[in-house]
Image 1 (spheres, rainbow, N blue to C red):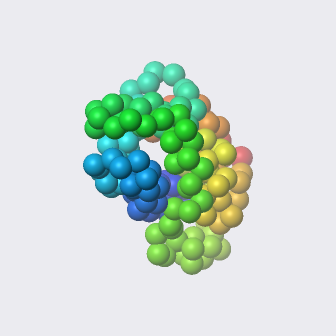
Image 2 (image 1 turned 90 degrees about the vertical axis):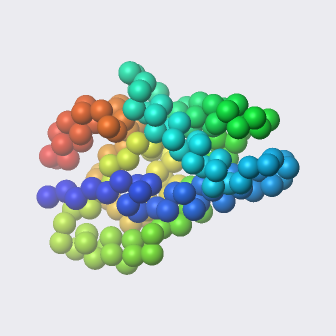
Length: 163
């Protein structure tokens, strides 16, 4: 039996990690918006992009588009391409939820443990979760060519998890 977890809600405190990165950008550039607000605006648009786009594009592209839209709506002048790259490269510094490092390996003693996430493989590989799970049990949108909440993602994940 494969038990999967979402990467950025169940395993990683993405809001804390992402807000810190975006907060540093805002402070360095003198923007009148804090990192938490930037993160929330980006995250909302990023999830909508994944939900609404009818074809697969890399997660990094969703991130770039969402950040560009957030910057435009907030009236800040930033390079969304470079900043989205920085945000995605920083995921290795984003904190795990407090019980993940100890409980995920414990759970893996009883079950096959994996991740089902809307990220690209390279982004996942940089996270603190990557060393905690078998790569064969990692089901990314890049591998499945679909995004949550599309039913195709779950159908493809179920088929892939059978090996």
